[in-house]
Image (cartoon, rainbow over all chains, first blue to last red; front, top):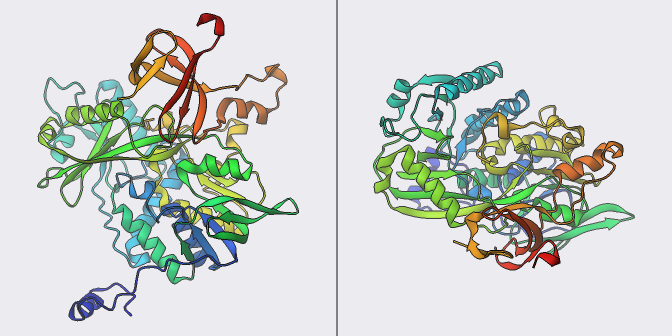
Length: 417
Length: 88
């Protein structure tokens, strides 16, 4: 059976009618016990299992997924990867992630189609240009690649944007991060699943967690729809469902779950080779390799676990897109969907011990978890393997809310929620 | 488009309403003597219920605050009621 992906094996299998490929990963049945169980088979959970096996040599690990792997937010986002944050703590976190993404196709022997096409955050007034300059300075001080673009430079990169003198949000310039980009989101989940599986991790799908089991007052494992599983430590990486697991486990999180919608148009010839976000219009978009315009915007304003959006948010995001690039009004919408995202008061993630011994949480990524998958996996694996924070995840411990030491990227980076 | 029922104005478009908060979350008093963990819970932590959830909502058009019971998974509105009975 052919396992390694290479040009040579592609030719070999081409001559063999593609019959010799090994499935990318096994769909395992749960064993009675593991060292570590990771709940949530999205990007973060799968990456955590991979780094546990790879970096910490702990491969007696199971990933438990209620649906199918990558079927939640990992497969529902708009695939943008960037590290254009303001605070040093966030820059360290997202820059770690971006640098891991840059190596990921090679590391996992799987083409995740990471295309570093750059991302611009537009500025719509003189005052916004001053804030943009401040953002660029902050990013450069944090060793993140950033440049301040003039209106002319923005026009050169993305001539389809609205440069009309009558534009509701005139373009004065932009903060650009050239190393930002997009990747195939499903491929990230599949690549981590395949690599983790090869290192001995069990990936268990269609397995819902019903509760945590306790022995002598201590967490001893989980009860699932496929039976009880004993383990030493449990990592919970379930995004929008974090509060549901918290209720089962008896700990509390400062999280509200919202629907976040995304959209794709019918495919057209290449017209946009970068990513643009307009804080004024509240919409961002890019063009996929297939030619579709992929776009999104702010959260639906009502807390919800429904994995579908409501029309008022659709209208405002679509209106924003047409304001940003009026010629896109000719396109027909192909699909629209939503994911349930876990939003924290400061728009920064939560990672660390849950408060209940034996349970650790990785959540609160809100609208931006996809870009953080390699870092989330690395740091969560470190936490689960060593029971101590990695220096980069330390500031994101849930105790920051008690100390009032928030990392308010919602305000600092103008995140759209 | 979803239609919500304001106990004062009747059925109105969802865009006129705003989610305001969790029911029964009272400011711990006296605030100056509350331990920081308790205070953080009051300020930042929420129940975030999946399924039927009783919440405080504001009808921004008339400015009234009321209770709404809603299924957070199906988005179905189960009931709305005024905060005080004597206003109904």
